Length: 166
Image (cartoon, rainbow, N blue to C red; front, side, top):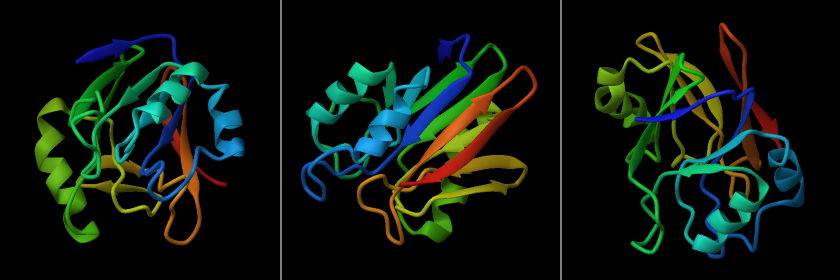
């Protein structure tokens, strides 16, 4: 488990699909990520140049998605302890949007997560399944209805996800 302390704001993106579906990270998204203490990428990165760019903006934690080749240097899933208090479980996800929450719940419930963060569906949402928070930032380059990204504001007692339309 990765431990990161003294974070107040985390940017969350997924499904960038660069260069197959987009030429680059939108300028507005890059500007917003500059102010965060960490960037989480939930997979379907496609090109390592994306991780290099993101790393120039802020520290990055990324996971591989189903469209990522072996050249992407990231694990399939990641568990992070934030500020010694909050457990975040991160994966890209797979399969139907209907089965993604039950599948990720089974995979991560042993970690007692505060939030399960994933991508894959290109549809942003914040919800709860069996008492566990779920957060999908959508896609900042290839959203189904609109492009989006996420942020998490962290204080001593809570971690609050939100979605930003780009």
